[in-house]
Image (cartoon, rainbow, N blue to C red):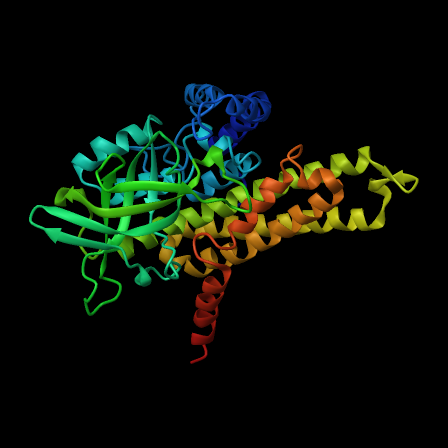
Length: 404
């Protein structure tokens, strides 16, 4: 494995680093000020549109899509260091580059499984950043980390599907620019193969019976910049059968295809969050004095910073290896590595952010620094895309199986 950046990756890295310094970091405070003046907290601050226009002008757009017909055509290994950089400002940078979840996963689904009409109607405006989208899978009544538990019904009635069910933590659904939902439910709830019972359908936001009921908080945050996480009710929602994504019974497989890249993207950005935490720790350590000397001279602080640097370097190598394997042997071949980074990265980054919060004292839990919100995001990723324990169980099973 060669972890040196190729010429294209290095060029994009330098452009993106400059874009972050010149545009994204200065826009963080501006976005908060503008949001406070909006009619609705879910509306998008004007500065976000400015960032998107500038990113597109500079060619920093749709970097996540490996299909060159629709995106930048980068491999996972090429995209990894770029996603890390955007993780330093996770509530602005991914959106500015049109590389924010859940739109990224939805665009990948439409690219791989959508038909020509679906791609024209929904993929094209998503690629252009003109609309946003949501992915409706998680449900409040069941353990949704096991997709076979999903209870939402998708019943055929002539030329239509009728959708009935409740979802929650549906990211992006509070955003008024969210125009389309990809909904996972069961078209064959009594089928003999529990992994062929599910299907996915496209449901436009304005479809009768679809109600975005309320926003769900995450550790007290409403995550406005992400478009919120909503509780959504589907009350006999009717859509044409042509809104089926792929084939009936293909929902489970599509979900797995969608989650593989999503998991590594999250881990890439988490490393960027950890890097920003280390930077803030160092700046605080040299600027703050306690008990007669700078914090930078306190042994415990030095240990925190040293341990954080070691941990980040380890994580980065593991994530880069995983990206390389996804490129060379496919997502299925990299299954163990994808699970390993999903276990290791949120756990480690939460610990680094926790130390950074501690180093900042009261400021660490306040809105004056990004650390508390970064911590909440990282801690949530120990649950999102499958909780740690699910990945540990599966990874352990694969290891034990080698020995019969």
